[in-house]
Image (tube, rainbow over all chains, first blue to last red; front, side, top):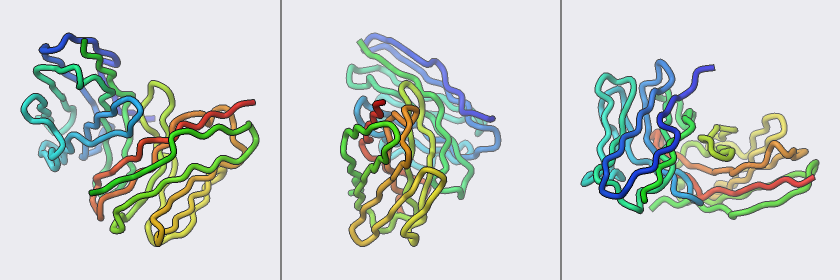
Length: 114
Length: 111
């Protein structure tokens, strides 16, 4: 069964350092999402791509976060510089446009900033 | 703004039914969803209901929707230890792909 792949699974970094996460969606899924999930809370959408274009990045802290999906397939989310409050699980999901809500999630990257 | 609220914790005995409740605020939501998250894993879509439906049943899962009160519930029949996880309610924003998730309800099933 096709799955969303994410790496790394775990990342520990010191504050002020740069960190990057990678996501490979299910083949053929044009829509890709990055979520942040703080411990004890539900996922919060950071950015949504349709192919290589950003559809929604209204909740992305653009002073330190950036996301790209250059060829409309895999995607990278970067944080520079990392802050203590960025410690969270970063989840990637993908879907077929129009199949509202049927988002398929990867296992996530757990980031700890020290 | 949009807000989805859930109780934080539910504990049930194996074999009993579990009922997880959720309230939402966006009356224009087209779909409402239940996702399951096991420890250290991503979210898995369990089921969803279209906003013009009152009930949907899928094997051991029953979803009830009270649109007037903006209340959604998930009933799990014959709850098993493998059902122990965090359950998230989510609403779509209008007819978009954007989802707003609740805080999650941790279901613990004991023998």
